[in-house]
Amino acid sequence: MHAMLLTELGSLSAIPDPLHPAELPVPTPAADELLLRVAVCGVCHTELDEIEGRTPPHHLPVIPGHQVVGRVAACGAKVKGWKLGERAGAAWIHHACETCSYCKEGRENLCYTFTATGRDRNGGYAEYMTIPADYSFRIPEALSDAEAAPLLCAGAVGRRALTLTAIRDGQRLGLAGFGTSAHLVLQMSRHLYPHSPVYVFTRSAESQAFARKLGAAWAGSYSHIPPAAVDAFIDTTPAWRPVVTALELLAPGGRLVINARSKEDADKEALFELDYQVHLWREKSLLSVANVTRADVRACMELAVEAGIRPTVREYPLAEANQALQTLHAGGLTGALVLRVG
Ligand SMILES: [Zn+2]
Ligand SMILES: [Zn+2]
Image 1 (cartoon, rainbow, N blue to C red):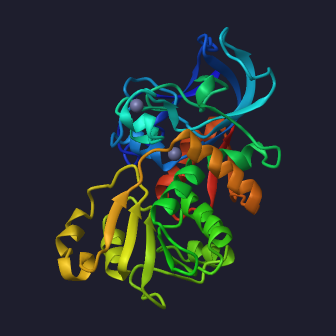
Image 2 (cartoon, rainbow, N blue to C red):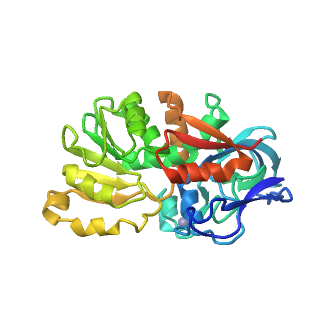
């Protein structure tokens, strides 16, 4: 099978082509696994974090990709409930222990032995991959392969972040950064909290226009002042400056949720400007969102169908995965990037 392999870590600025095309044998599913013939795989910012070493793979080489839609090509001997040819998806959660206190509380995203698709196990930048049947997802009829892929991570973690803000209808939502996840969160918020104006902060004028088109009440850059204080904020940027700005704009009692797998160190000095009175006083709170649960993924799919949420998608062939990663790295993207595999 054709695959794009990550063989060594490094900076995307220094290594323009971090993935290498390879011909590999089709993997054999274990007794509890499905073999998927991959149709599409979404491109996620976490792949940049893997390649640049901020969340390094457990082993190299590895096939990245964790927003995978395909068809069941084979079932392990113990698999029940899946048919050959049926559509199935793989998400970031590859496995959790199911016995620790987090797993038992339904917070398997926090499990200490959480393993991730496309980082700790081979993912969907390939024609075939295996996944545990209990960690694979049904794809609703209403969604095409390319529409479903970005929902498996960007949508699912975005929805989790939106829930963690504890926003109520009518309260103002701020989005710092307007990448793949945020453009889905904006649509979710318009459906779930129709009286909540959404303010979008992004440097790119094109992204600001895209946000307004999707229903943002206001869009500007970080140096602009929005019409009012913000009750709930989600930051999806790789930087620290937007976090400091968001805390300053946060209303008393407001929450800021950071939805980023890691933060780059480049503008860390922005944190020295944190002033307790300005940025935290009056019960402002700051938390992060980590990984996703299987329930998050399923709920995101259901919400997308119910609310008519669709990602704006730009497709690349699998062989151009490096170009897709560089496009994501360059920033200013409007919508989602998806690799067409088969
Ligand atoms: Zn992801
Ligand atoms: Zn666990």
